[in-house]
Image (tube, rainbow, N blue to C red; front, side, top):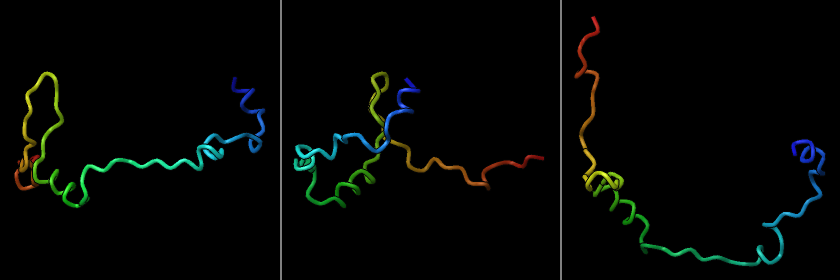
Length: 75
């Protein structure tokens, strides 16, 4: 298979994405919110961990960070 692909002409092939039926077709994606910024900030205000089948829905911890001053000395 590798030899076959290596010997194929590299520039003489039809590209399915540039064919006329697909090139002229326009696809409109649905929008969930009219204001994109509100949608982004809504997720920042209400952080939640991804759902799991074995754990109930839990809010994401907000301030569980470690600063260098919290760590003890190595010596």
